[in-house]
Image 1 (cartoon, rainbow, N blue to C red):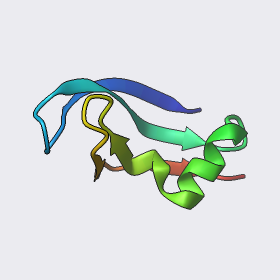
Image 2 (image 1 turned 90 degrees about the vertical axis):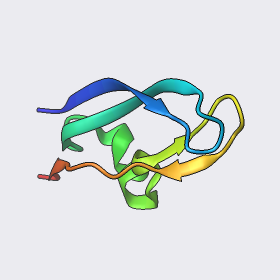
Image 3 (image 1 turned 30 degrees about the vertical axis):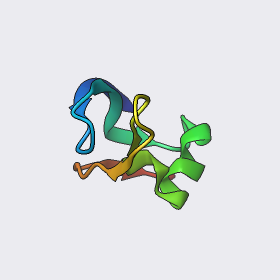
Image 4 (image 1 turned 180 degrees about the vertical axis):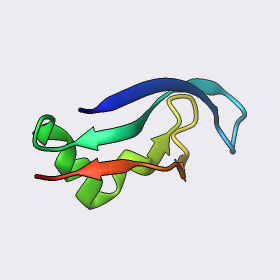
Length: 66
């Protein structure tokens, strides 16, 4: 079972707040469209819609690939 949550994040460059999806659990067998994001790291990358700054977001993730 996958569990995404929308959280407000403050951009470290411009201090604008925007939504970011944080996954507490991700099953790529059930959500196969998310697997490329895990493999290329974009699941943990925040791009600010205001200033286009890209910043890593570190959070715990329970990953399932059955």
